[in-house]
Length: 268
Length: 66
Image 1 (cartoon, rainbow over the protein chains, first blue to last red):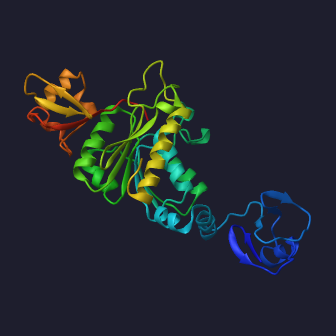
Image 2 (cartoon, rainbow over the protein chains, first blue to last red):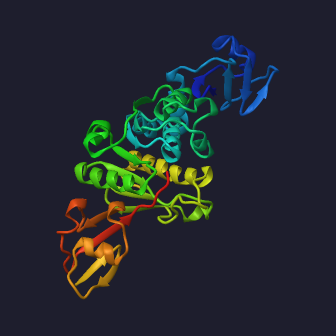
Image 3 (cartoon, rainbow over the protein chains, first blue to last red):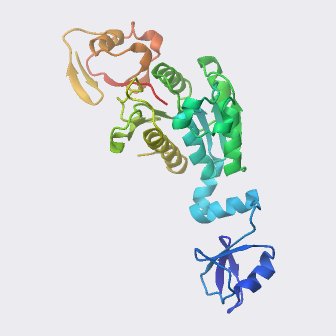
């Protein structure tokens, strides 16, 4: 019969029992889960069962993580994600969320650029921790990303993005995510990137502040290679601050647009 | 002149440059991206680029926050 052991297909004898499976394949496991339910009693396995065996504190290898993702995402999809190279300009509320979403699904490579350090006021929406205050954001983010999925290649640049260095940072990516804070920086990057890299996609964001409705955040295809996420109008200003929920919605619009572009070369 | 601006047909009495169009719309040039007939315009040329009837223009003004 066919079962799944840690998401990998495995042909085993009929009537095989759980503990025997453990003895054969992962003797030192101390957590056994059958079809989503933890168990400590031996039992006969059935065709199609999903068995997960975990040793507490043990890190799965990069290959194991990849095969888990293959099983979840299907091999064709995973292959395309793994080949994806994505740039992220800005590692604040948008950029840190986009980076984490893409690394969780096994993105091949990220080039992340930011010149800031983590400040206490960032923690209301950005993917950093109290013990990272004062650390350059790109260094803190790389550390956090490595804890999620060490297989993704993360290139970081602790610098300010300017027209002169855009080619250096993002010349090799397929898709660039604009995740800056100020309107001027957003426009500068968009103008420069779309004109100088007409074959690459840009996924930008505008209008993400406050606690206005979730559903006014939209993804719009502005031109063939230019996608824009946000409500277009909610600027960050006194009385309307940037907050984790809505910034996260916009960031995940961006991340999902990147995913669609990697898989289908278009997005909606 | 009659132009298509962000999908809507607009008519102006005079021929405008991009810079003049942005002023009319009360937009800040350093925050916008302008595409004319599917080509992204260099911001340095806003003041010398004249619009003409039949042009299709996409205009995005960014707001801050990230």
